[in-house]
Length: 248
Image 1 (cartoon, rainbow, N blue to C red):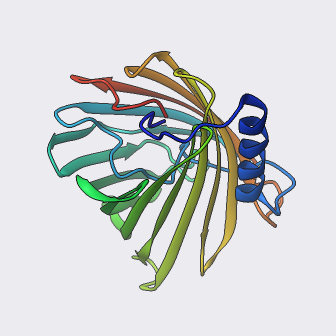
Image 2 (image 1 turned 180 degrees about the horizontal axis):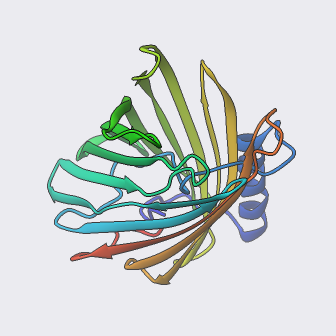
């Protein structure tokens, strides 16, 4: 979490405020929700300038899902480049996936306690039995992160996604609340929705094994209104060349 915010509350009020914020993000769900990986809701500046980050995660959802994410690097301000390789994204389907993304942000892109950014990404899959990759989707997202009292922050992502298979465009909305308990441990609640899909909600935790360098994330949840949609995810993220600018 960003430690620059001057707003502080007493310990008891911080706990109450955090629980209310998480409850607001997750309502009206009464069970845990899916996230793949934790967190999907992106931040304008997750990789320190001049550094690289490697994410790798394992996900279980009604059958083993093994996923691997390639490095994301921030060579210079304000451009951050990333890619991902999804191996056996759905083990029972045998699909492979490849993706790439570019994120644009700058320290000057702020309004009060809010920071802004822009992300462009594309993802393709090689379905089982096919010899070539097919475009799955392309996405353009506006990113925002708002620092709150009690070591809390809110993330929002909003923008269109073009679905290659159907030729239709949907509007995505991702929102997440994060609470930093200390420099190493944080909790999160997340919602992912669109105008053409059911809402996905999740709870997760992030623990820095080596602060700013090596982190471990766990999440669990389900899609609202979808039976047997429980998802569990284990993720490791490793920052190379430079430490993460702050815990997440």
